[in-house]
Image 1: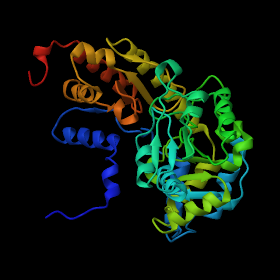
Image 2 (image 1 turned 120 degrees about the vertical axis):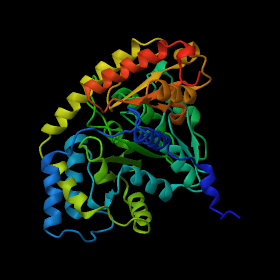
Image 3 (image 1 turned 180 degrees about the horizontal axis):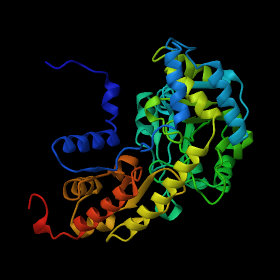
Image 4 (image 1 turned 60 degrees about the vertical axis):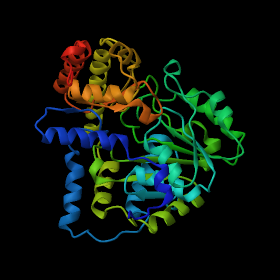
Length: 402
């Protein structure tokens, strides 16, 4: 007899990125030289001054609980950063510090969604967005922005997706998985639509803000549409831009009543983020940006190399991104050339034949695509491109299992 689990678990699926990463790790343990391009994690070390702040916190015995919603000193650093970088003003009671931006987003869904509430999530989307909504008894609505639109939805698509049940819109710019970023004009057009619907909350995930090289300066949604500031929860964190994934610090600024509800959810789940990590985050947000700028320049150089290399492969098309460390390739031509049924089969093919691990686009709401992370060295990227080229050109009789 099997033990019963909650029905809500049947609504969601395990993270595809974590599943592929685990598979690649297992193959490595078996002695196979797999290049893992599935995980969204900078390959740089956390900058030294940030690490030293964490070490100092341990040595000083700063290892006990903090306020459940975050240390006042860290909140002040976050407030200053929002003002400095985005022109957004918040009070302490409008800030929540969480164990990663992922928890921030989960807190938000649990705090504001009632059964049947709809959340508009533009596709391609990060794999966890729809499942978070489902866990909170909401309904994901996923209008698709095709490659011809730069993988971004239009104002008309947003307007067409809104119903009387729409409670929230989730925006992610620059985007995981595509690297696409909305321009100021595009954000303003979306804002014009949302101004007509006062019941809708906007959640904007800016976690890749500092890994960005777009043609115009980065813009956050509330920065472009100040009339919607009081309906926008702006989410960010230290994981990506500061190479602090394992430190697990995310945060948000938003309407007082919404942030208070999110803090209640967190207070009954994880309580505070790590005290040590919070001290390190203060150093990150208030310290010099030299290392961050160096990392961003390296990601841009890798992007140019890798996207160019992918576009030279048969049956693969890849739009350049404006940020992040992902290449989102249309592999439908390669699938057709190889006689493969779908992008999951293609991802399995390159893992077995090229020993390169990527994540199928279906997991991001974009069938026929593959997400590959270029958060690895130039030499590794060149090796991956070489392996992919050979696998795509290999006759069927020479493939594994034939």
